[in-house]
Length: 146
Image (cartoon, one colour):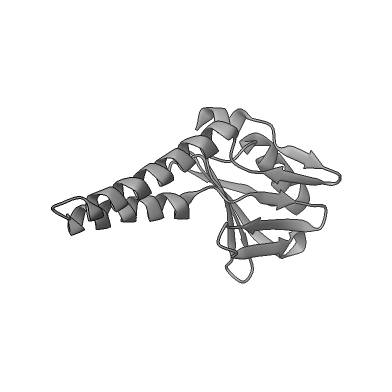
């Protein structure tokens, strides 16, 4: 987690992309593929072990769900798009709160409708993300241990 937070975000023109670093992405991908293969193997080898297959399949799905979604920061706002297509976008003027949780090293940006963009400890550029959010919103950062 430390290496992800210390990694630099990718800049493309006037946008900055905060994704997972290569090590985090590789480890997550290996875990997802490994648990998927284990689920299939346990299901088809005699005797089939359904509980084991469901357990490994659930771990693979959990890993896929938790894969760090890239956050795109632009002069007009920020947008986070998960791999399954769910997009959360918010203009800077709609942001109502900034929270930093030290335990998981997560920054949560919320807007007036309750939508949240989460910059987790597995994203690149934690300090850079915090600095940009504070400068664009002029909000005070709420901080907690967890």
